[in-house]
Image (cartoon, rainbow, N blue to C red):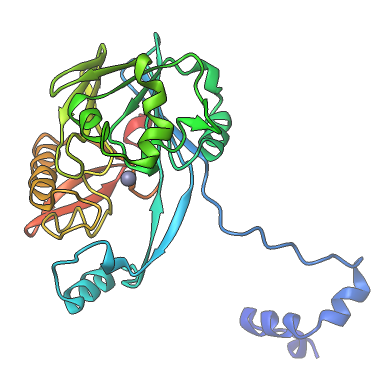
Length: 308
Ligand SMILES: [Zn+2]
């Protein structure tokens, strides 16, 4: 008889699954656990020398017709093939919006502000800071998804901040009759200072001209105690389609030739010098490295390098 009740593990699993009534009679009823939905944390923090750097996820959006945005100058077959080889769909994509905080120990500096103040403040508060604590807001460029959080219903989101942006960028949008610029940037002009290539935001934070995506787009080299990370807005907007194929045209690049040249120049520097970067639209937490591959680059997300 004993051999009759000896079951293999697989048989036991199958048998158990088919006996809910027997189980229910032996133990109190237990409701099935609720589904919680997909989740991504709102912030991520690491140290760079004496600095603390926090990336904030101020929202995501899903966009259809991915090739209407990326790789507009290549065949649909090539686009589909590259996407499939990288395990991502070709027909849609997810955009991340990642403002970044640098706490230098002297100042709390925010780079870019997301689509709106509400989502930014939610992530900022989750990370342990308040809007009142922000000393400096730096704007990489003036597309709406970078300046959207500067104001809320006509009121500045960061009451104690000064603002820094590129002079070429400001001069382009000032007079372009752009609604987002007029509502969110122009009212702050008196508290704004302007820099050019090599200009300093604060000790250790230096502007790097990255023109092309917009006329005056700026990247920023952040350095402390001999460690560096490059922060950029839209020099590369997708971790496969932009990093892997820098010459693929991107609908949002205002000067496509200049944008591709800038993309190559900065990615080449990152690969050569093995410097990590924070990319505003990279998959959260938006921190990684690039290595050369074929005629482009491959994204290598950071793991524990900054925790050691
Ligand atoms: Zn952007």
